[in-house]
Amino acid sequence: MSRYRTSVGLNPQPPSRKPGSSSFTHIIFIVKALATLLFLSLALAAQTIDPPVVKKQVEPQYPDDLKFYITDHPEVKLTVDERGEPFAVESPIKIPDNVVKALRQARFEPAHEGKRSVAVTILLAMPIRRPLSETGGLTRAWANPKEIAEAQTIAKGLNDEGDAAILQKIGQNPIDVQSRLVALRYWNLHDSSDNEAARLKQLRWFAENSPRYEFLATPGASPRWEEKGSEDYEALRRLWSGKLAENPDQVILDNATNFLRMTDPAVAETALLKAAKTTDHAMNLLGDLYAFAGMGATAVDPFLEKPSDRSAQLASTPFAAQAREKLLKTDDLRLLFSALQTVSGAGDAAFCTALLERAKQFYSQATANCEATATKKPTGPVRMGGNVVAPIRTKSANPDFPPEAKSRGIYGTVKLQAMIGKDGKPHDIELLSGPFIFYDSARATVAKWEFHPGTLNGEPVDILSTMEVNFAR
Image (cartoon, rainbow, N blue to C red; front, side):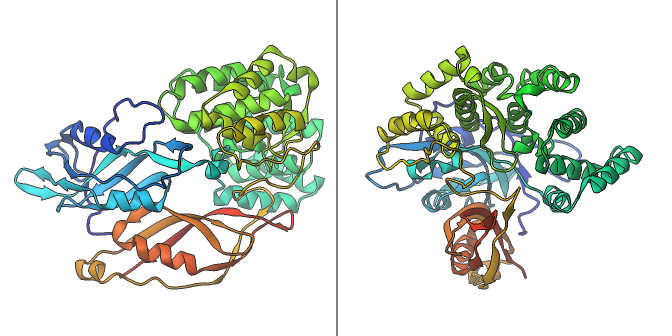
């Protein structure tokens, strides 16, 4: 937290932009187009603030040989202090070091409230180029908050009697969310037709009472193909189809398409194509959707996000054929590589090989696991959840507190994302949020940490992890 915590918040809508654009000129346009009517967090009446105006912008430096890449367009919150200098950033996705450096060098004419310069937070659409070597991050992702992780641990220790006791608790207290999560995880671990029906009923409860709930984006919330037509399935289909027709945000897109992608792919496709005009994330989900359709997937592993069952009949439908054709002819690298990540390790050797050959036309070093049988081993970095055991830090280092921050009375927290490798060391350390003044120290500190590697089913794996470095008084 810093002394700029009470800065004004701006939430203008960014202008339309062309997919793939990579110029920082968007920043100038957006900042100049900001509405001047703002609201102070502690004020009861609106006051007019003159927003900051860019005086200096710096383009990120990319390697000269970076010819093929994915461009992300995250909307980041940038705090500009009363001196017109970038103070802090908060991003929905990680920001690479070269973009952080460019953003830190920007300079603004400060925002003014009357004649007084004030700190403000503005919303920017910031393009970030990602080399095709980093396309493993294009797959579906989901949160694993503490309550879901705890439910997984409890479910592993249950037997049928314990499951019955959990159901009794739910009957006595219908809003007992933790017990419902434990039941869902238990049924994920113990597959049967009765458990599948019970699982669908619990998913219906969550979707009807809290459609934005995190668990609904996980593979454990995906239905089986054969559940179509049941009362609970049809109620959920109507609910999610309605949500997708209402200009959904990213959370609803994740949750709804996670449910509909195998059983009602055309409905999910329509919503994703519409959303793809304004958000990169929709193309990631569309690649996943087409990949599942092309494989004829009828069920998904509730922990590994790979098809656990496939149907030759489903793979021969017109939608599946069109999905394969679109992927094998597309020039959209985000769509292609997200699909390749989904197919990799899923056991459809022919489809995987064809996608890999297409990907190699753009990136000769593209790789995928195209074995003829599905593998339980991940083909890239995994996220926390399911049977993943988190890395344990074995070596720490304390951050150096920048003298300028100390003299200015600034303190706060920097949040970073990194891949904890099988070697126990952090790799690809990138910024998520925090004051810029602490960024260099935080990044250098995390680079010194060492871990006992995380595991999946007892085997060491590369794990994506979020870490915080605190700079306290």
